[in-house]
Figure 1: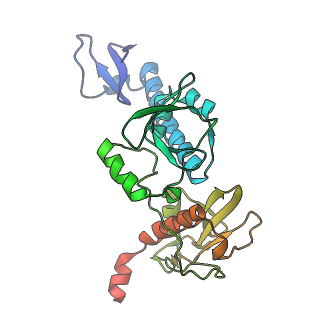
Figure 2 (figure 1 turned 90 degrees about the vertical axis):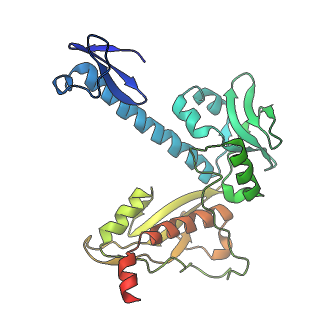
Length: 284
């Protein structure tokens, strides 16, 4: 932590916050108002805001790689690994080999030595694949066992992988069906509340639908839940969940892959969970 002069004081960044000390070297509880507009203070606060945005973007990018099943070139990981924000987002993610088998938990990425992993025996190993695979949890066999092992290792994933909610397509599903109604009918007093929840969860709203895009086996699929597109003050409710191809054509349920199914159901469940429970209780 390096101190920078700001008037009669010195300021620095400590754990993402601007801190201050006086001329005697005593650290203060807060930054004095009289130096709030000092260039050094303003600069540090702007830097803090940038670092926060950078951390969020790194995490969002890593989760997108996972959700879209995008293999990442080894050179990309070794280049970004020294960045603390990238490393925090990537550390302890499960990495699989080209055969889809779990290779271990990511602990290091070095241009000369490749990836450092903790394998399922608890040993440290090195691998150097051309492409690094960070699989969606629905694709991991023995997911529950992996979760238990992760707890034993003290694994804490910033990116939601092992402990991400997953949904598996039911065995008795009507493959010719076009939508799922399980999470339809979630009532919201005002449309803007439902749109706001969708945005808070990270989903885009387009044409009255909350949408979640997935790239699976090289094919783009979009999960859609109707949320309404009228006056923001009107009452609304969540609609059925359906999936479409890049041309906007609705897909049959039998055509939906495991990742697209899981992510679509995750979105629909999260939107439904924010419904107005009080109204439901009054009706009951």
